[in-house]
Length: 178
Image 1 (tube, rainbow, N blue to C red):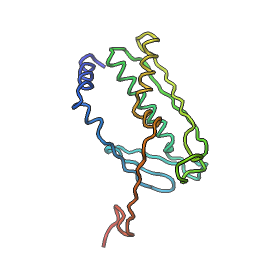
Image 2: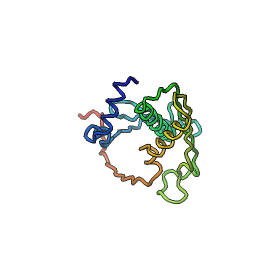
Image 3: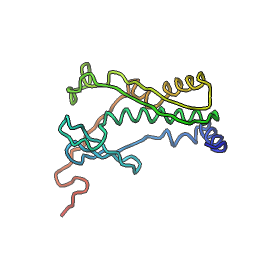
């Protein structure tokens, strides 16, 4: 990024009113499509999800679990880009690999608690090439991973408040009325 953009970005991050739009409540709408395939709309962007063939699905898109891993990787990558940009460090390459496995995937749909499905641990591994000392890059990496909003959402208990609207037959969105 050029120095003008770096200065502008730095100014935005020190002004609480300019950061507010990024802190806003975020919302998505996920709609069942067919089989296990769903389509999520996020600010006009489309995110497809499906299950694997192992679950009898068509495997037409990443699973919801892979989207969680991808969200963490994307957040950490964006944080690193932000930090190197603010410091004027030239970034040549950055990739973030996130992996994890479940302890008991067969328990989906059961009430949350001991023994329900969850990732056992998430491993986040970065690869970077940049014009900075190794110590500087490792320090930035540690700060970014520990401060990642997505990592912190996963890492600490985040309440999930659920509700359900029952729609009368014939009143489904997109259903033609007579």
